Image 1 (cartoon, rainbow, N blue to C red):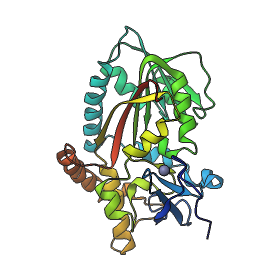
Image 2 (image 1 turned 180 degrees about the vertical axis):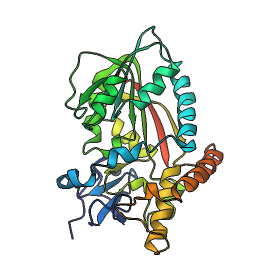
Image 3 (image 1 turned 45 degrees about the vertical axis):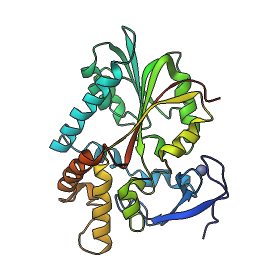
Image 4 (image 1 turned 90 degrees about the vertical axis):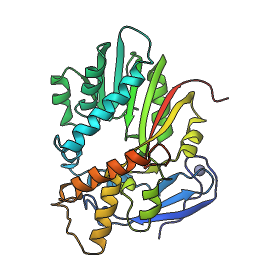
Length: 311
Ligand SMILES: [Zn+2]
């Protein structure tokens, strides 16, 4: 048994309890069990200890190709919704020429969506640790930096910075936010998408397997409250916080739970994402979350940040 963490990495409080014990049911990358703890004070959930030594193993070579799994109807609908969402945000940015940065942006597929949404975007930059994505991104006209955001160095300022499902993957979310702050233009906006620990599916499935853990690849999972705590050590303020659908988390949770009851077969060779139930479950829960989103906390959050003082 590894010792219980001494304090919350987000708010530093000492009141902590075990929240979930999980395994990698999504890719079967390692056989280990991982412990997730919750801070009673700010509600942040975090893995402990952080499996830094396993980094190469928990992102298997085929991981990135799984992420953008074809142009299914679910993916197309999602892109359409994203486009609508981005259009609203881009309308709030002043200026004739805009620069956009996607941290963890891979081949730049989201930057493609942005460019198609607003012709004022003249420069697009993807920063990612994925070696394979470089050529594709550059062929599409995006600048590409292979490495982490902390290693990325430029004099350029960005009007729009995307961190979509990124912050939960990193060892030091605060350092990433602080770096993004230095890259942001005066009127710029950072868009963060990250799981929400206070969702219905998180509560229902934490005892078996909650997809939002993406175990063991998500290391810090926030709620609106804990994310605001994190911002206290930055010069970034919340412009807007909303919930958005977390259909894949539902699908991962349901299939992993069926697997534990030996009702379905999944393995390293046949990950959940390729199980025939994945697409219909994702579509069904996307609709479910879409309907209840106006009045319920769903399992992903959109957080819009701008420069400002927290003092
Ligand atoms: Zn805390």
